[in-house]
Image (cartoon, rainbow, N blue to C red):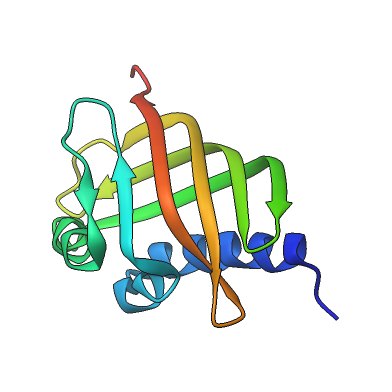
Length: 129
């Protein structure tokens, strides 16, 4: 039987592989309907529709991300996850890649027996060239 921690690690791996493949539908399936994303300098992004609209902006780019899980804590049907995340976005037109690095703090909730992202605070910053 899979432990909650294993299931959460699998969620992260699935999120990264789907993001790299540009599979927004799979990523949306890994989040709660009322998910909220917090990012420096931006208003909160609320819900799946807002996330999908933001992801549409990345269609002309390729994406590669590495997430190093620092901590997972589970409390019944709730959990939090802290990661060190590195993302490289490569524009299709040959412009230089954009790299961002930093930490994320995510709150997960178990719904219908599976873990989903409920809240996410993304503290990534641009890496100087």
